[in-house]
Each structure stands twice: as structure tokens, then as C-alpha cells.
Length: 505
Image (tube, rainbow, N blue to C red; front, side, top):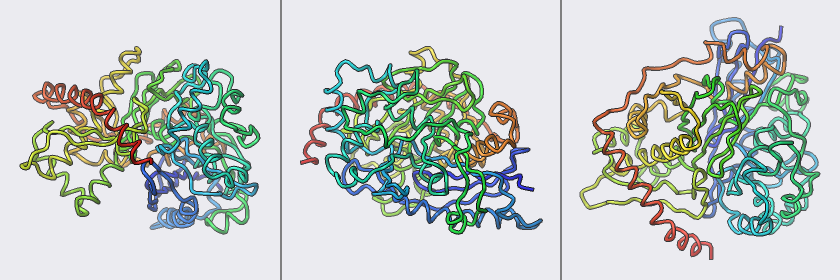
């Protein structure tokens, strides 16, 4: 009997698969393969979809083998449905057969600086925030497509559909062309109230509406695995394909965010912070997503760098291990230095692709450990900035926050985050994150889960670790350091802009 579900996460740093039993929420197996980030020019962030496709063929057999170990064999025939999730809103230009015409342009890419300005100038009377739910920023899809038309006209002319990362993978498996509703919501192309494409934006950016597929809700059946895709990925032809959703949304859902005020900090390649709200919060500094459960919303922020900045620091410091860097950071003085983490510009809450990274306060006595600790603190300050905005807008935050993704395994990073935010953190232990959320979506679409509300009531979805309590003796020091961080960001922005213009020439 086909009773299992498979979730695939097209992540910034890896492709991950989770095989689960939707009846009780148990994860039977999981596997991942790395994905290299390509940044050939300043501010660029790309990934090769061929790597995602190759990774799929590697992870599916591995989860089936792992689920079979020590028990009855688990085969592709046991999988009732597959759903995908991933970064949003990545942009894939594909031809009529769904083949990518170039590398995927990721959500933290900052190349379309001129096009952002030009589109804003062309539509001075359009309130992007009110109409779309998002400000016109480096994440917006319209300027990215305008950049393609200007710099890669051959690609733009050959484009038949524009898809998100996870929607493309579903299409490659056999689904009909579509985009999931949170890709549409975060793209900045669609009306928040009606869901319709905003004609003024499309016209100003030179977008043919025909290249934008229909938006669907997570949990919607979108097709079936083709024979060719089944041979490639080790799946059963005809397996139901279900629309998943944005990685941060499904990760938050699978981490137990179910009630207004629940909030989550994700320490992944980028840095995400999400809170459940009963009403849509529209603010130019934030992003807005829909919770999988109708009637709830997920106002959120996404910083361009988090784990990706750590990987950069590892590389430039001689390939030091994270364990060594953490030990050195733990021994360093708290809030000794200020780091501005704008190494890919910045997304929320400042939305400035021309910002650049910096370290402040250095002298010859400082060590690698102080620099590394400053990076972890800078990421925490970015989350604190978002907390302030939520508070300004009247969004209630629960007294404790959940923390997930790769960085949540680090005791040092979690403690720094708790200290800098001044809140107790509940780590989500061994959580597959968005891939598990996608598996639940597959269960909803296949009728194996009664609905999104029923899934969040399942206690087996989430295991919480020991709470991380902030050190009250550091509260004043971190408050002062946070203000210095904000002041430094303001003071250095003009210099960053000059450096960005110089590197662009």
C-alpha cells in the first residue's frame, strides 16, 4: 500500500530529501547532497539546476535504502506523493520543455540595482508595499527579469516560463508549469488582495504575462512523476506530485508555528525570522507570506547572509573548522567588535543591495576568535532589528522563540543569539526543516493527512531541546553594542554605496 510521502528541499547550500509516514509524522529517513553557491561577480548569487537534478538522483535511493535498513524493504512503490520546497523567490528562466536556459538567480542576488531604481522611477505612483505586500527590492522578480532582458536578451527571448526553484524541480519531475502562492506573494508581481498579476509592473518591466504560470496553494496536486523522471530519480512513474511551498514557510510550519505569536529564528545559509499573525502585516521593511493554514499569515524577515558568511570566513581564515572557530569565539569577550554582515548587500529590514561588509574596532591584539564571534553577534543584531520592527507594528511575540536549521546545533551560536536578543530559545532538535514540511504537503495533497491544522497538532513533528536562557549580566553590554551596530550601519552606508559604484565600473 502506498502510504509514505517524500519531501524534497532545494536549499541554498544543499538538496535534502525526507521520507516520512504522514499518519504519525515519523521521519523514516533523510539524506542530503551539497550545492555550491556561485557568485561570479559582486552581489551575484546563482546555483546550477543541473546540480539539483543530479542531487535528486542521489538522495532518493539513499532514503529508500535507509528506511529499509533492519526491516521490511521500502521501495518507490510505497511513496504515495512527492512535494518540493526551496528558496524563494529564486528565478529560473526555462524553455518550452521546462529546461533551464541559464543558472538560477537566487533570492539573495543583488545584480539588478539599476533596474530596481528604474522600475521605481517608472511607477512613482504605485505603492508596491500596499499592492503586493513587499517593497521593491533586490528580491523582487520584475527587476531581475528586466536585467535579463537587458544583459542576456537571448535568454529572455527564449524564455517560455519563469519558475521558482522548487516549482521547477516539480515540473522537471512531471508537474504542469506552476508557481506556489508564496513565490507569487514574494515576487512583488501580484496583487495582495486579488492574486492577479499587476499589469503596470509587468508593462514597466517588459514582462509578457504569458511567461508567468498560474499560482497554486501548497498541498495542491500538480501532476504525476513522468516515466523519464522516474528512471532518473528512482521513483515510481505516476506518483502524485503536490505543490510544496517556500522553504522558510514550510520549515516554520514543521517547527510547530501554529498559533498567533509563535515565532522562529532560522540559522541557515541566510537568516530568517518568522512570526504567526492573524492579519497580513504590510511593511516595506519586511516580507509577508501566507501560513499553509488558511487565515493565518507569516510576516517575516530574511537577511542575505548567515551561514553563508560563516562559510566565507572559514575559507578566508585558512579552512578552519567550525569547531575550532566556535571554541575561539566562546573564549572571546562578548560584544568586543562590531561586524556589519552585508557581504551580499542586505535584504530585510534595510533592503539595500549596495551595502558592504565591515569589521570595526580592530587592533593588533585581536584574534580570529574575536572576528568570528563578531560575525555571530552581527547576525543576532540583524534579528534584533526585526524584533524591534515587529514590536513597533504591534505584532505580539511569544516569550520564547524557537530556533532551527544548521546553526541551531551550535551551543555557542545559540547562546550568543539568546544573549543578544534577550529571550529564551527553544532549539528544534534534529529537525529536517522545510523538507519535512514538504512531506506534510504531499500528505495533504494525497489525502493522507486531513488538513494543515491536523498536522500541526501532531506532537511527533517537533522535538525540543534544552532551553537556552540569556545571560542577564550581558544585557546592558549587548544593548550598547546593538546601538553601535545600528549607528555604524547608518554611518558607513554612504561609503558602501561609493565602493559599490566603483566596483560596478
